[in-house]
Image 1 (cartoon, each protein chain N blue to C red):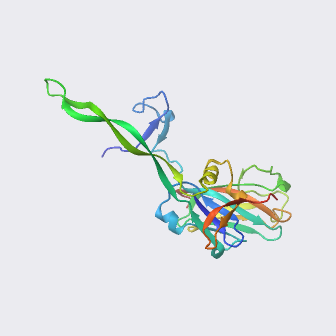
Image 2: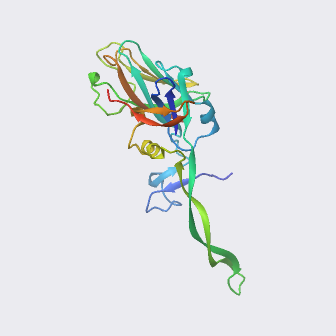
Image 3: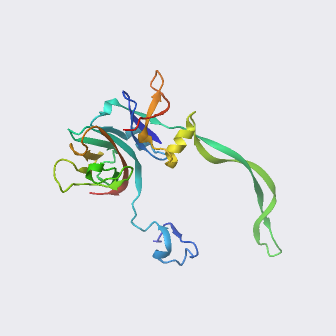
Length: 132
Length: 129
């Protein structure tokens, strides 16, 4: 049976003879395929953990990536985004933990991640690729 | 773009980016957080409309090219056709939506503005904390 797929070469390279390194894209590469991506915002209160949830409904645990602001108390710079999970070596319930099950993506902010009321922003990517 | 917001405070709590979404995303995906339970979240799907333009295309016909019977395409004229140039948000506040899409503005800095029926009619920048 034939080998079918799609590929795109870099400028200057013949797609019919290009090596894998000379390709921009090939359907044989096991790349992440984005199911959905977007933003989120959570109001922290400084006393109870807060969890942001996205219901993806895929029926399996997907691969994902989450970027989040980190409060300046823990080294984050205002406006910067950081890959999470984040855990502080100091201890306490201050971490930012993303996790997923077959229905939802969750991003949990520890009860003490902010000293008081604080709105924190995140960006998420959920992939078709299975995590489990 | 799909925007999820708190029905009570009007705060935007999240988005799904992109202009084209399949039925699974439109019908099954939702968002919530500890401070905004699912039943308090409403969803706004930004509608888009095609912006068309008139362009000139060649009229091509299959013809016998030479005495050997070789067949090929020949341009016999030109015609004007209408094609979709791009898609734009089909709302009065489309410029703000485009700013969200390009990253010039961030949805998390905004609350939605709704009419008496709860329909989204615009956005209002939140006061910085």
